[in-house]
Image (cartoon, rainbow, N blue to C red; front, side, top):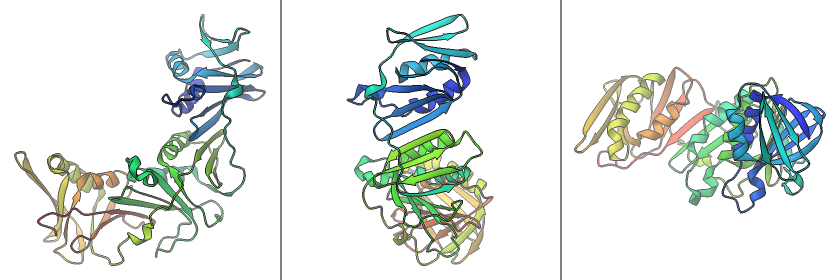
Amino acid sequence: MEFVCEKKQLQSGVAAVERLVSTRSTLPIIGNVLFEAGKTGIKLSANNLEIGMELGIKANVTREGAVLLPAKTLSGIVSKLPETAVSFKLNENGTVKITYDQSHFNLHSLPPDEFPALPKVKEGKSFSVDPAVFSNMIQQTIFSVSASEDKYILTGVLIETGKSTFTGDNSNLRLVATDGYRLAKCGGRTEAKAESGVNVIVPARALAELAKMLEAGKDESLKIVVSGEQIGFRYGDAYLVSRLIQGQFPDYKQVIPKKGGTKITLSTKEFLKAAERAAVIASGSANVTLLEVKTGKMKLSANTPDVGSVDEVLTAEIKGSDKARASFNIRLITDVLGVIETDKTVIELGEGLSPGVIRPEGNEEYLYIVMPIRTQEVA
């Protein structure tokens, strides 16, 4: 095996696949990156047995072949190389000579025979979607997954296709994530009529890696193929495959309040700034912050004994009861305000311990639900 490629492209490719490599596995072979040199360039692959990725890199190949190189060592070397052409040559003794300018490394390699091949999800339901749309959908939901392995099903994001049952929601593709305290639902549309009936849970880590992969911004569609236990994402010369989380995702439709509450419309930017300021004080009291409507405005207040208190008053458009109030974990609210892209945000407050509903103004396809906190003031 022998080829030459540019350092910039090499570093980008190695960094992408190296993130998947497991350092804690009992199977040492998956701590490597597979290099395959062919007529059209080289292909890099990594596989941690849960998620796998392969991607192509342009290279001038003078001798075809394949080899395994240690991921962490290789990544460390490549990231420090100067911006120049880099050549790889597999020697008969099994070492790979990495040459740049007038210098070189010699890196021990392994034969590729025992490296677990990436499964290709060939059969199953498939659809294509605009990569920018899907990447945005990931960003607007993934932060709501559970960080606890005790709620394993909730560590993934639900992907479902088909007609929405909600008024005003014209999506045929939805991503939903919840940790039991909040829920984010984002709708979008496939490029062609999607096969209905896709209802799978994808590990959040796989979608996070996919979002990074989509940052390349190629002018191509993202193709998604779903089988019984796996999901594959094809984007240009990059391919990512992941195991699905098996189990029943909570029926999110049952969580959405049937009865509307007081609608409060206010500036997204000002709401976020006020919430972040309130969080400084609230952090000392489990992030509890009271939101209430007062004299045509919305007030955020928090109090931590021995620290202090804060009252933030925001100009807002109020529709409904002027006595609406509820306490929330303010961090859950700043999370969603950070991904809302519209100038104004609508928050609905119900009665008693009803969930709060947050959405971008004029967008019925995005919905965020946050559970209130029981306090002496709100019970």
